[in-house]
Image 1 (cartoon, rainbow, N blue to C red):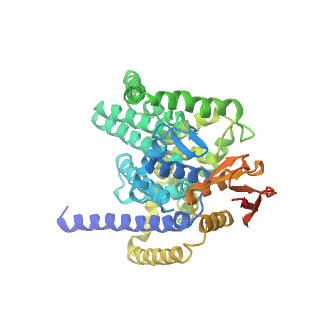
Image 2: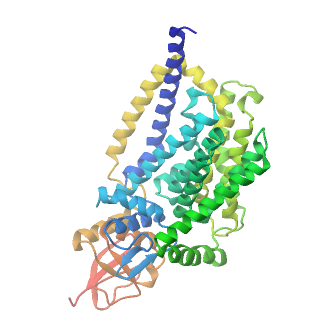
Image 3: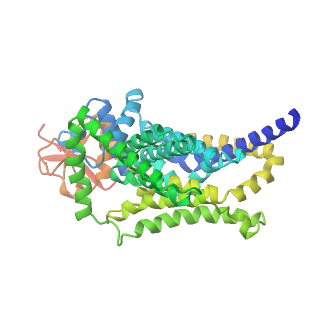
Length: 472
Protein backbone atom coordinates (compact mmCIF):
# COMPACT_ATOMS: atom_id res chain seq x y z
CA UNK A 1 0.00 0.00 0.00
CA UNK A 2 1.55 3.31 -1.05
CA UNK A 3 1.68 6.47 1.02
CA UNK A 4 -1.11 8.19 -0.92
CA UNK A 5 -3.65 5.39 -0.41
CA UNK A 6 -2.75 5.14 3.29
CA UNK A 7 -3.35 8.88 3.66
CA UNK A 8 -6.77 8.57 1.97
CA UNK A 9 -7.82 5.75 4.33
CA UNK A 10 -6.73 7.71 7.41
CA UNK A 11 -8.50 10.80 6.07
CA UNK A 12 -11.75 8.86 5.57
CA UNK A 13 -11.52 7.37 9.07
CA UNK A 14 -10.84 10.77 10.60
CA UNK A 15 -13.63 12.42 8.58
CA UNK A 16 -16.17 9.77 9.62
CA UNK A 17 -15.24 10.10 13.29
CA UNK A 18 -15.42 13.89 13.18
CA UNK A 19 -18.91 13.75 11.65
CA UNK A 20 -20.05 11.17 14.20
CA UNK A 21 -18.72 13.18 17.13
CA UNK A 22 -20.33 16.37 15.79
CA UNK A 23 -23.69 14.58 15.60
CA UNK A 24 -23.18 13.39 19.18
CA UNK A 25 -22.41 16.96 20.30
CA UNK A 26 -25.59 18.22 18.62
CA UNK A 27 -27.56 15.60 20.55
CA UNK A 28 -25.72 16.49 23.77
CA UNK A 29 -26.73 20.15 23.58
CA UNK A 30 -30.26 19.32 22.41
CA UNK A 31 -31.06 16.66 25.02
CA UNK A 32 -28.93 17.51 28.06
CA UNK A 33 -28.04 21.17 27.45
CA UNK A 34 -31.41 22.70 28.46
CA UNK A 35 -31.23 20.92 31.81
CA UNK A 36 -27.62 21.89 32.51
CA UNK A 37 -27.87 25.63 31.90
CA UNK A 38 -31.30 26.28 33.41
CA UNK A 39 -32.41 26.16 37.02
CA UNK A 40 -34.48 23.32 38.38
CA UNK A 41 -33.37 19.80 39.18
CA UNK A 42 -34.77 16.49 40.34
CA UNK A 43 -35.05 16.44 44.14
CA UNK A 44 -32.41 13.75 44.76
CA UNK A 45 -29.81 15.55 42.65
CA UNK A 46 -30.47 18.79 44.54
CA UNK A 47 -30.02 17.01 47.88
CA UNK A 48 -26.71 15.54 46.73
CA UNK A 49 -25.60 19.03 45.70
CA UNK A 50 -26.49 20.41 49.16
CA UNK A 51 -24.53 17.63 50.87
CA UNK A 52 -21.53 18.24 48.59
CA UNK A 53 -21.59 22.00 49.16
CA UNK A 54 -21.86 21.55 52.92
CA UNK A 55 -18.91 19.16 52.91
CA UNK A 56 -16.87 21.67 50.88
CA UNK A 57 -17.69 24.34 53.47
CA UNK A 58 -16.67 22.15 56.40
CA UNK A 59 -20.21 21.26 57.48
CA UNK A 60 -20.24 17.56 58.34
CA UNK A 61 -17.55 15.07 57.36
CA UNK A 62 -16.98 12.55 54.59
CA UNK A 63 -18.44 9.65 56.56
CA UNK A 64 -21.10 11.73 58.32
CA UNK A 65 -22.59 14.04 55.70
CA UNK A 66 -24.90 16.75 57.03
CA UNK A 67 -27.93 18.03 55.16
CA UNK A 68 -28.65 20.67 57.82
CA UNK A 69 -27.03 21.60 61.13
CA UNK A 70 -30.01 23.36 62.71
CA UNK A 71 -31.85 21.07 63.11
CA UNK A 72 -29.11 18.45 62.72
CA UNK A 73 -29.88 16.04 59.88
CA UNK A 74 -27.10 13.53 59.11
CA UNK A 75 -27.32 11.75 55.75
CA UNK A 76 -26.71 7.98 55.67
CA UNK A 77 -29.05 6.99 52.85
CA UNK A 78 -26.13 6.33 50.49
CA UNK A 79 -22.34 5.91 50.72
CA UNK A 80 -20.45 9.22 50.50
CA UNK A 81 -17.99 8.99 47.60
CA UNK A 82 -20.03 10.92 45.01
CA UNK A 83 -20.63 13.77 47.44
CA UNK A 84 -16.96 13.74 48.35
CA UNK A 85 -15.90 14.06 44.72
CA UNK A 86 -18.54 16.68 43.98
CA UNK A 87 -17.44 18.72 47.00
CA UNK A 88 -14.07 19.21 45.28
CA UNK A 89 -15.85 21.05 42.47
CA UNK A 90 -17.74 23.14 45.03
CA UNK A 91 -14.42 24.18 46.54
CA UNK A 92 -13.32 25.47 43.15
CA UNK A 93 -16.63 27.13 42.20
CA UNK A 94 -18.59 28.00 45.36
CA UNK A 95 -21.97 29.76 45.42
CA UNK A 96 -22.97 28.92 41.86
CA UNK A 97 -25.94 26.77 40.84
CA UNK A 98 -23.94 25.45 37.87
CA UNK A 99 -21.53 23.49 40.11
CA UNK A 100 -23.44 20.21 40.32
CA UNK A 101 -24.25 20.49 36.62
CA UNK A 102 -20.57 20.97 35.79
CA UNK A 103 -19.69 17.93 37.87
CA UNK A 104 -22.36 15.82 36.18
CA UNK A 105 -21.21 16.95 32.72
CA UNK A 106 -17.56 16.15 33.52
CA UNK A 107 -18.54 12.67 34.68
CA UNK A 108 -20.50 12.14 31.46
CA UNK A 109 -17.55 13.26 29.33
CA UNK A 110 -15.22 10.84 31.13
CA UNK A 111 -17.80 8.06 30.63
CA UNK A 112 -17.94 8.85 26.91
CA UNK A 113 -14.14 8.76 26.62
CA UNK A 114 -14.02 5.49 28.54
CA UNK A 115 -16.65 3.93 26.29
CA UNK A 116 -14.62 4.92 23.23
CA UNK A 117 -11.56 3.26 24.80
CA UNK A 118 -13.58 0.09 25.44
CA UNK A 119 -15.01 0.21 21.91
CA UNK A 120 -11.52 0.36 20.43
CA UNK A 121 -10.79 -2.97 22.14
CA UNK A 122 -14.01 -4.83 21.35
CA UNK A 123 -14.55 -3.52 17.80
CA UNK A 124 -12.02 -3.26 14.93
CA UNK A 125 -13.94 -0.46 13.17
CA UNK A 126 -11.77 2.60 13.70
CA UNK A 127 -14.18 4.86 11.84
CA UNK A 128 -16.98 4.06 14.33
CA UNK A 129 -15.33 5.31 17.53
CA UNK A 130 -18.23 7.74 17.92
CA UNK A 131 -20.91 5.04 17.86
CA UNK A 132 -20.94 4.10 21.59
CA UNK A 133 -21.18 7.82 22.40
CA UNK A 134 -24.18 8.12 20.10
CA UNK A 135 -25.88 5.20 21.84
CA UNK A 136 -25.61 7.04 25.15
CA UNK A 137 -28.26 9.37 23.71
CA UNK A 138 -30.39 6.59 22.24
CA UNK A 139 -31.08 5.33 25.79
CA UNK A 140 -33.11 8.24 27.25
CA UNK A 141 -32.62 7.39 30.92
CA UNK A 142 -28.85 7.97 30.64
CA UNK A 143 -29.34 11.55 29.47
CA UNK A 144 -31.93 12.14 32.19
CA UNK A 145 -29.60 10.81 34.90
CA UNK A 146 -26.83 13.13 33.74
CA UNK A 147 -29.12 16.16 33.86
CA UNK A 148 -30.43 15.15 37.30
CA UNK A 149 -27.02 14.75 39.02
CA UNK A 150 -27.69 11.11 39.92
CA UNK A 151 -25.28 8.95 41.92
CA UNK A 152 -25.63 6.25 39.27
CA UNK A 153 -23.53 8.29 36.82
CA UNK A 154 -20.38 8.23 38.93
CA UNK A 155 -20.99 4.62 39.93
CA UNK A 156 -21.33 3.72 36.25
CA UNK A 157 -18.03 5.45 35.50
CA UNK A 158 -16.14 3.31 38.02
CA UNK A 159 -17.85 0.12 36.85
CA UNK A 160 -17.04 0.87 33.22
CA UNK A 161 -13.44 1.50 34.25
CA UNK A 162 -13.49 -1.88 35.98
CA UNK A 163 -14.71 -3.49 32.76
CA UNK A 164 -11.96 -1.71 30.84
CA UNK A 165 -9.46 -3.17 33.33
CA UNK A 166 -10.85 -6.64 32.70
CA UNK A 167 -10.44 -6.19 28.95
CA UNK A 168 -6.83 -5.16 29.56
CA UNK A 169 -6.37 -8.28 31.68
CA UNK A 170 -7.82 -10.41 28.89
CA UNK A 171 -5.24 -8.94 26.50
CA UNK A 172 -2.19 -8.92 28.78
CA UNK A 173 -2.99 -11.73 31.28
CA UNK A 174 -1.55 -9.49 33.99
CA UNK A 175 -3.38 -10.02 37.29
CA UNK A 176 -2.68 -6.39 38.18
CA UNK A 177 -5.70 -5.45 36.07
CA UNK A 178 -8.00 -7.74 38.10
CA UNK A 179 -6.78 -6.07 41.30
CA UNK A 180 -7.41 -2.65 39.78
CA UNK A 181 -10.87 -3.82 38.69
CA UNK A 182 -11.62 -4.87 42.27
CA UNK A 183 -10.63 -1.44 43.54
CA UNK A 184 -12.83 0.21 40.89
CA UNK A 185 -15.72 -2.03 41.95
CA UNK A 186 -15.25 -0.90 45.54
CA UNK A 187 -15.28 2.72 44.39
CA UNK A 188 -18.59 1.97 42.65
CA UNK A 189 -19.88 0.48 45.90
CA UNK A 190 -18.92 3.69 47.72
CA UNK A 191 -21.08 5.58 45.22
CA UNK A 192 -24.39 3.72 45.50
CA UNK A 193 -23.89 0.59 47.56
CA UNK A 194 -24.35 -3.11 46.93
CA UNK A 195 -25.96 -2.73 43.50
CA UNK A 196 -22.46 -2.00 42.12
CA UNK A 197 -21.37 -5.57 42.79
CA UNK A 198 -23.06 -6.93 39.67
CA UNK A 199 -19.73 -6.50 37.84
CA UNK A 200 -18.48 -9.47 39.85
CA UNK A 201 -20.33 -11.46 37.16
CA UNK A 202 -18.05 -10.24 34.34
CA UNK A 203 -15.52 -13.15 34.54
CA UNK A 204 -18.45 -15.59 34.45
CA UNK A 205 -19.97 -14.03 31.34
CA UNK A 206 -16.55 -13.94 29.65
CA UNK A 207 -16.26 -17.64 30.42
CA UNK A 208 -19.72 -18.36 28.96
CA UNK A 209 -19.12 -16.45 25.72
CA UNK A 210 -15.40 -17.13 25.26
CA UNK A 211 -14.11 -19.32 22.48
CA UNK A 212 -11.55 -20.87 24.85
CA UNK A 213 -13.34 -21.66 28.10
CA UNK A 214 -11.07 -22.09 31.11
CA UNK A 215 -13.18 -22.84 34.15
CA UNK A 216 -10.44 -22.70 36.79
CA UNK A 217 -9.09 -19.47 35.36
CA UNK A 218 -12.57 -17.95 35.63
CA UNK A 219 -12.82 -19.05 39.26
CA UNK A 220 -9.41 -17.57 40.01
CA UNK A 221 -10.34 -14.27 38.40
CA UNK A 222 -13.64 -14.12 40.30
CA UNK A 223 -11.96 -14.98 43.60
CA UNK A 224 -9.28 -12.31 43.22
CA UNK A 225 -11.86 -9.74 42.09
CA UNK A 226 -14.16 -10.38 45.08
CA UNK A 227 -11.30 -10.54 47.60
CA UNK A 228 -9.80 -7.28 46.30
CA UNK A 229 -13.17 -5.54 46.62
CA UNK A 230 -13.64 -6.77 50.20
CA UNK A 231 -10.05 -6.03 51.22
CA UNK A 232 -10.44 -2.49 49.88
CA UNK A 233 -13.26 -1.97 52.37
CA UNK A 234 -11.24 -3.58 55.18
CA UNK A 235 -8.35 -1.24 54.45
CA UNK A 236 -10.74 1.71 54.49
CA UNK A 237 -12.02 0.71 57.96
CA UNK A 238 -8.46 0.29 59.26
CA UNK A 239 -7.52 3.78 58.05
CA UNK A 240 -10.87 5.45 58.90
CA UNK A 241 -12.64 3.44 61.66
CA UNK A 242 -15.75 5.61 61.32
CA UNK A 243 -16.32 3.99 57.89
CA UNK A 244 -17.52 0.84 59.67
CA UNK A 245 -20.28 2.68 61.51
CA UNK A 246 -21.16 4.80 58.47
CA UNK A 247 -21.43 1.91 55.99
CA UNK A 248 -22.18 -1.36 57.77
CA UNK A 249 -24.21 0.19 60.58
CA UNK A 250 -25.98 3.36 59.46
CA UNK A 251 -26.21 2.78 55.69
CA UNK A 252 -26.99 -0.92 55.96
CA UNK A 253 -29.72 -0.28 58.55
CA UNK A 254 -31.25 2.95 57.26
CA UNK A 255 -31.17 2.35 53.52
CA UNK A 256 -30.72 -1.32 52.71
CA UNK A 257 -32.55 -3.32 55.39
CA UNK A 258 -35.28 -0.73 55.95
CA UNK A 259 -35.94 -0.45 52.20
CA UNK A 260 -36.16 -4.21 51.85
CA UNK A 261 -38.58 -4.45 54.76
CA UNK A 262 -40.78 -1.37 54.42
CA UNK A 263 -40.44 0.59 51.16
CA UNK A 264 -42.53 -0.18 48.09
CA UNK A 265 -42.70 2.09 45.06
CA UNK A 266 -43.77 -0.42 42.38
CA UNK A 267 -46.54 -2.97 42.02
CA UNK A 268 -44.24 -5.91 41.23
CA UNK A 269 -40.57 -6.77 41.26
CA UNK A 270 -40.36 -7.01 37.48
CA UNK A 271 -41.12 -3.32 36.94
CA UNK A 272 -37.39 -2.68 36.54
CA UNK A 273 -37.38 -5.18 33.67
CA UNK A 274 -40.10 -3.15 31.94
CA UNK A 275 -37.98 -0.01 32.19
CA UNK A 276 -34.94 -1.88 30.90
CA UNK A 277 -36.78 -3.33 27.90
CA UNK A 278 -38.28 0.07 27.07
CA UNK A 279 -34.79 1.61 26.91
CA UNK A 280 -33.50 -1.25 24.77
CA UNK A 281 -36.52 -1.08 22.45
CA UNK A 282 -35.95 2.61 21.68
CA UNK A 283 -32.33 2.06 20.61
CA UNK A 284 -33.16 -1.09 18.64
CA UNK A 285 -36.09 0.61 16.90
CA UNK A 286 -33.93 3.55 15.77
CA UNK A 287 -31.25 1.15 14.49
CA UNK A 288 -33.87 -0.93 12.67
CA UNK A 289 -35.46 2.17 11.18
CA UNK A 290 -32.16 3.35 9.68
CA UNK A 291 -31.51 -0.17 8.44
CA UNK A 292 -34.82 -0.21 6.56
CA UNK A 293 -34.20 3.28 5.18
CA UNK A 294 -30.85 2.08 3.86
CA UNK A 295 -32.63 -0.97 2.37
CA UNK A 296 -30.45 -3.46 4.18
CA UNK A 297 -31.51 -7.09 4.34
CA UNK A 298 -32.82 -8.31 7.67
CA UNK A 299 -29.76 -10.45 8.34
CA UNK A 300 -27.50 -7.47 7.54
CA UNK A 301 -29.08 -5.09 10.05
CA UNK A 302 -27.92 -6.82 13.22
CA UNK A 303 -24.37 -8.10 13.69
CA UNK A 304 -24.87 -11.21 15.82
CA UNK A 305 -21.72 -11.84 17.84
CA UNK A 306 -20.63 -13.17 21.21
CA UNK A 307 -19.29 -9.88 22.61
CA UNK A 308 -22.53 -7.98 22.10
CA UNK A 309 -24.55 -10.74 23.77
CA UNK A 310 -22.02 -10.87 26.60
CA UNK A 311 -22.40 -7.10 27.18
CA UNK A 312 -26.18 -7.43 27.18
CA UNK A 313 -25.94 -10.24 29.76
CA UNK A 314 -23.67 -8.09 31.93
CA UNK A 315 -26.24 -5.30 31.76
CA UNK A 316 -29.01 -7.74 32.69
CA UNK A 317 -26.94 -8.73 35.72
CA UNK A 318 -27.09 -5.07 36.70
CA UNK A 319 -30.86 -5.09 37.09
CA UNK A 320 -31.12 -8.35 39.04
CA UNK A 321 -30.01 -6.83 42.40
CA UNK A 322 -32.64 -4.11 42.01
CA UNK A 323 -35.37 -6.76 41.74
CA UNK A 324 -34.66 -7.93 45.29
CA UNK A 325 -36.36 -4.81 46.64
CA UNK A 326 -39.83 -3.43 45.96
CA UNK A 327 -38.31 0.05 46.15
CA UNK A 328 -37.50 0.71 42.50
CA UNK A 329 -37.05 3.81 40.38
CA UNK A 330 -36.26 3.92 36.69
CA UNK A 331 -32.91 5.71 37.12
CA UNK A 332 -31.60 2.79 39.20
CA UNK A 333 -30.86 0.93 35.94
CA UNK A 334 -28.52 3.64 34.58
CA UNK A 335 -25.21 1.80 35.30
CA UNK A 336 -26.55 -1.28 33.55
CA UNK A 337 -27.53 0.87 30.58
CA UNK A 338 -23.90 1.85 29.93
CA UNK A 339 -23.13 -1.82 29.22
CA UNK A 340 -26.35 -2.15 27.23
CA UNK A 341 -25.33 0.84 25.10
CA UNK A 342 -22.05 -0.87 24.23
CA UNK A 343 -23.80 -4.15 23.46
CA UNK A 344 -26.48 -2.60 21.27
CA UNK A 345 -23.95 -0.40 19.46
CA UNK A 346 -21.95 -3.51 18.58
CA UNK A 347 -25.10 -5.42 17.66
CA UNK A 348 -26.29 -2.75 15.25
CA UNK A 349 -22.96 -1.52 13.92
CA UNK A 350 -23.63 -2.79 10.37
CA UNK A 351 -26.37 -0.19 9.98
CA UNK A 352 -24.10 2.60 11.17
CA UNK A 353 -21.24 1.39 8.98
CA UNK A 354 -23.54 1.63 5.97
CA UNK A 355 -24.77 5.03 7.10
CA UNK A 356 -21.23 6.38 7.57
CA UNK A 357 -20.28 5.10 4.12
CA UNK A 358 -23.25 6.97 2.70
CA UNK A 359 -22.26 10.26 4.28
CA UNK A 360 -18.52 10.06 3.54
CA UNK A 361 -18.96 11.89 0.27
CA UNK A 362 -21.13 14.51 1.97
CA UNK A 363 -19.32 14.64 5.32
CA UNK A 364 -18.07 18.17 4.70
CA UNK A 365 -21.63 19.52 4.33
CA UNK A 366 -22.92 17.41 7.21
CA UNK A 367 -20.18 18.86 9.39
CA UNK A 368 -21.18 22.39 8.41
CA UNK A 369 -24.82 21.63 9.21
CA UNK A 370 -23.84 20.20 12.61
CA UNK A 371 -21.69 23.24 13.40
CA UNK A 372 -24.59 25.49 12.41
CA UNK A 373 -26.95 23.53 14.67
CA UNK A 374 -24.47 23.79 17.54
CA UNK A 375 -24.38 27.57 17.13
CA UNK A 376 -28.19 27.75 17.05
CA UNK A 377 -28.45 25.51 20.13
CA UNK A 378 -25.93 27.55 22.09
CA UNK A 379 -27.77 30.76 21.23
CA UNK A 380 -31.07 29.22 22.30
CA UNK A 381 -29.55 28.01 25.57
CA UNK A 382 -28.20 31.50 26.23
CA UNK A 383 -31.56 33.15 25.51
CA UNK A 384 -33.53 30.78 27.77
CA UNK A 385 -30.87 30.37 30.47
CA UNK A 386 -32.84 32.39 33.06
CA UNK A 387 -36.04 30.40 32.65
CA UNK A 388 -36.19 27.32 34.95
CA UNK A 389 -37.07 24.15 33.12
CA UNK A 390 -38.96 22.80 36.17
CA UNK A 391 -40.28 23.94 39.58
CA UNK A 392 -40.22 27.58 38.50
CA UNK A 393 -42.68 28.74 41.18
CA UNK A 394 -40.84 26.98 44.01
CA UNK A 395 -37.50 28.43 42.88
CA UNK A 396 -39.01 31.91 42.65
CA UNK A 397 -40.39 31.55 46.20
CA UNK A 398 -36.89 30.71 47.46
CA UNK A 399 -35.35 33.66 45.62
CA UNK A 400 -38.01 36.06 46.91
CA UNK A 401 -37.40 34.89 50.47
CA UNK A 402 -33.63 35.21 50.11
CA UNK A 403 -34.00 38.68 48.61
CA UNK A 404 -36.06 39.83 51.58
CA UNK A 405 -34.39 38.03 54.44
CA UNK A 406 -30.96 36.80 53.29
CA UNK A 407 -29.62 33.28 53.70
CA UNK A 408 -28.66 30.87 56.50
CA UNK A 409 -32.09 30.95 58.16
CA UNK A 410 -34.25 28.29 59.82
CA UNK A 411 -37.95 28.08 58.98
CA UNK A 412 -40.45 26.33 61.21
CA UNK A 413 -42.38 23.81 59.15
CA UNK A 414 -46.06 22.93 59.39
CA UNK A 415 -46.87 19.19 59.11
CA UNK A 416 -48.59 19.79 55.76
CA UNK A 417 -45.16 20.62 54.27
CA UNK A 418 -43.43 17.64 55.87
CA UNK A 419 -43.38 15.55 52.68
CA UNK A 420 -42.26 18.38 50.38
CA UNK A 421 -38.59 17.37 50.35
CA UNK A 422 -37.99 18.99 46.98
CA UNK A 423 -38.99 22.40 48.32
CA UNK A 424 -36.75 21.99 51.34
CA UNK A 425 -33.88 20.95 49.06
CA UNK A 426 -34.31 24.12 46.97
CA UNK A 427 -34.34 26.33 50.08
CA UNK A 428 -31.19 24.70 51.36
CA UNK A 429 -29.42 24.76 47.98
CA UNK A 430 -30.22 28.36 47.03
CA UNK A 431 -30.39 30.19 50.36
CA UNK A 432 -28.90 27.76 52.92
CA UNK A 433 -32.26 27.80 54.68
CA UNK A 434 -33.31 24.72 56.64
CA UNK A 435 -36.73 23.54 57.81
CA UNK A 436 -37.49 22.70 61.46
CA UNK A 437 -40.39 20.18 61.52
CA UNK A 438 -43.42 21.06 63.66
CA UNK A 439 -41.71 24.06 65.23
CA UNK A 440 -43.94 27.13 65.29
CA UNK A 441 -41.61 28.92 67.74
CA UNK A 442 -39.18 29.83 64.96
CA UNK A 443 -39.04 33.39 63.70
CA UNK A 444 -40.08 32.16 60.24
CA UNK A 445 -42.82 29.63 59.52
CA UNK A 446 -43.98 27.91 56.32
CA UNK A 447 -47.25 26.12 55.68
CA UNK A 448 -49.87 25.48 53.01
CA UNK A 449 -52.88 26.34 55.09
CA UNK A 450 -52.41 28.73 58.01
CA UNK A 451 -50.36 31.43 59.69
CA UNK A 452 -49.69 31.16 63.45
CA UNK A 453 -51.44 33.78 65.55
CA UNK A 454 -48.15 35.37 66.55
CA UNK A 455 -46.97 35.69 62.94
CA UNK A 456 -47.63 38.02 60.04
CA UNK A 457 -47.56 37.24 56.34
CA UNK A 458 -44.18 37.68 54.72
CA UNK A 459 -44.49 36.09 51.29
CA UNK A 460 -46.75 33.70 49.41
CA UNK A 461 -46.05 31.59 46.33
CA UNK A 462 -46.13 28.11 44.78
CA UNK A 463 -49.03 27.20 47.08
CA UNK A 464 -47.06 27.99 50.26
CA UNK A 465 -47.25 30.78 52.83
CA UNK A 466 -44.17 32.04 54.68
CA UNK A 467 -44.74 34.19 57.74
CA UNK A 468 -42.51 35.81 60.33
CA UNK A 469 -42.99 36.58 63.97
CA UNK A 470 -44.76 39.87 64.66
CA UNK A 471 -43.26 40.19 68.14
CA UNK A 472 -39.58 40.45 67.15
